[in-house]
Length: 278
Picture (cartoon, rainbow, N blue to C red):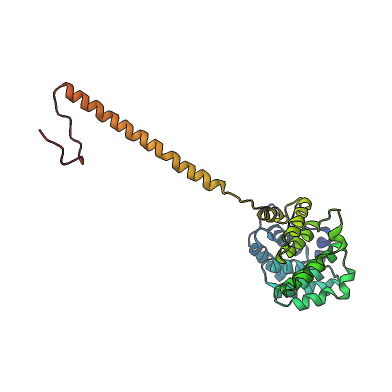
């Protein structure tokens, strides 16, 4: 697949660049450029990102960063079995536990929420940083909901991180998940409160909390474009009437001129056939 000329490969993180040093220089550059494309497209064009990840994987399958990128690209395309295989490979290469939550979420995607819950209780979770632990909590709550255990999902999300007033990168998503679980359990008043809190902490619009809050408040969104088009159609009618009036005025003038000369007004083709003829 073609790669834009502005992509040099230098855009990748230093850690990834270090991993690619094990490759010949030309190959490392080609792999890095494909990895840059994966990162650039994964949100807006997951299929495109997946295609670039497969190229990188074909070129350097023994590089952990490549396996991880391939895993996230597969995950973004809901290819959960493939993603899990790539994440496991990356973890074997590095011994890192950072991918544990997303691996558990792959189990959910494959219809195995019980396995995801088992992973949520595994020793690896204690090795995660705070962000990873919050992510694991979100996955565990999702697994509970998959199993129809709404109240258990709510309890799972209740944590010091949820109660904290400080805003962290994960705060909006945690509050949103809690609000959504409350709403699913029929606790609408509490859900509205937590959707509002999610909006407060969601500075970059990572969730649709504001839309969910508006729905609960009964706010209806109107498509302005459709309205404008409708107004345009309405305005077209008076213009047509003006043209018709102009033609009528011309006919009246002709009639008056003919009458003054004692002549018959010209008969318009397609007019009334029953009109008297002289």
